[in-house]
Length: 154
Ligand code: HEC
Image 1 (cartoon, rainbow, N blue to C red):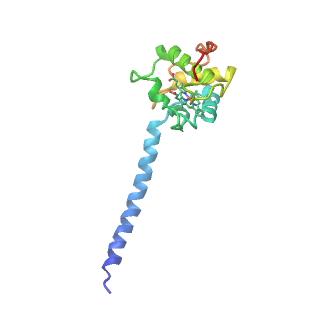
Image 2: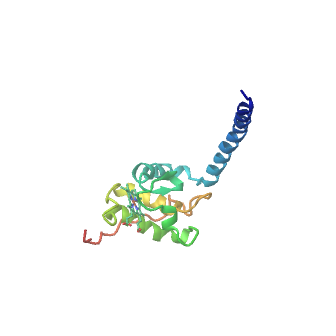
Image 3: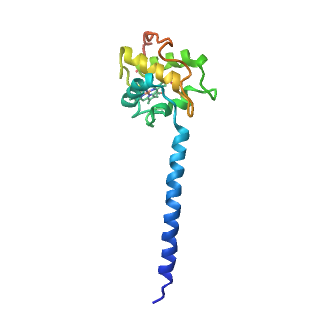
C-alpha cells in the first residue's frame, strides 16, 4: 500500500496546526478593534441595555448582536459619526421607542422611568462609537421625560 495518503495527511495536519492559531489570534485582534470604551459610570446602563434590549438589537457599546430589531449603531447614526450635537435627537428617538413601542414589533415599556432614561442616554452617547467612547458625559447630559405617545392604529 502506498504511504502517500499518510504523507499528504501529515502535511495537511501540520498546516492546520500552524494556521489555526493564526486565525484565532487574528479574531482577537478584530474584536479589540470593535470595542467601545465604556466609562465606569455607564456600566449599569450598559448592563440594562444588554439585559433588556440586546436580544433584539445590535449595539457595539453593549457588546450585543441581536437581529430582531435594527442595528442601533447603524440606524441612529446616519451621518457617519456620532457627536455631542446629535445626543438630544438620538435620546428622544430612543426614549420614544422605549416608552411607546414601535410598529407593533418593538414592545413598549420594557424598561420604565429612570431606567428608561438611563438606557436612552447610554444609547445616545455611545451609538456608532466603535473604537471610541461616549460623545457626552451621561452624568450631566439632559435626560428629559418621554413625551406622551401618539395614538397608533395598531
Ligand atoms: C422583542 C424585540 C425588541 C426588544 C426587546 C427591543 N426592541 Fe427596539 N426595536 C425592535 C424592532 C423590531 C424595531 C423596529 C420596529 C419598526 O421599525 O417597525 C425596534 C426599533 C427600535 C428603535 C428605532 C426607533 C426609530 O425611531 O426608528 C430604537 C431606538 C430601539 N428599538 C431601542 C430599543 C431599546 C433601547 C430597547 C431596550 C429597552 C429595545 N429597543 C428593545 C425590537 C425590539
